Image 1 (cartoon, rainbow over the protein chains, first blue to last red):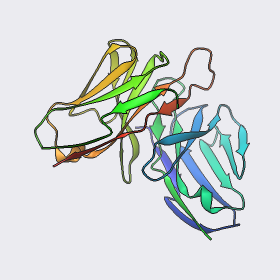
Image 2 (image 1 turned 30 degrees about the vertical axis):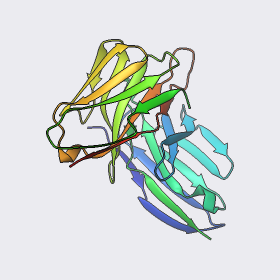
Image 3 (image 1 turned 90 degrees about the vertical axis):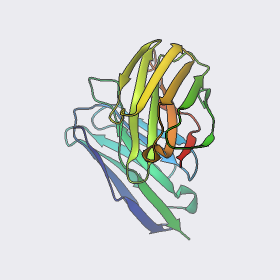
Length: 111
Length: 115
């Protein structure tokens, strides 16, 4: 059974602080996705990581992928309130058409 | 927003009644997906389609059926709704040919309550 585990599940952090969300997965995959979901809304694509060592950055968010360790990280730099949301990672196996999601990390940034 | 709409957006129904949710896309994508989202579970795949009349099961397909008679429409049917099917349902498309990212883009969701 393919598993995608995120931690932490809940994260409360102060504005201006840094933190990292971790995503571990149990299948061979060269393709990992990060999404953001605001309360009551749909999922919005943040990053697509396509190969080992891939790093993508957008504003205060930076995502990286280590396919050998089957680990992706989403690093938050100098958090601001607008980053409060739930973040999901997802993988798709190298063979197959399905996407498997982590349970999500609920991030609250406190002023 | 990849031109994805879902209908209805909200529905309340009673146990034992049939329910059909519709996903409509305007960009001719081959792959379409149905997920359910529940607290503590993230998104879980119900069924997906890789072409007209071509569908396959996901990890939580029991109690659900799907149909795709046209490229643009992917229907999810609960033959006899149960309270455990109360959830938020998301449709998604996946970009392919020519797009190396094979990204998924999601519809706005349907909130279903089964009483």
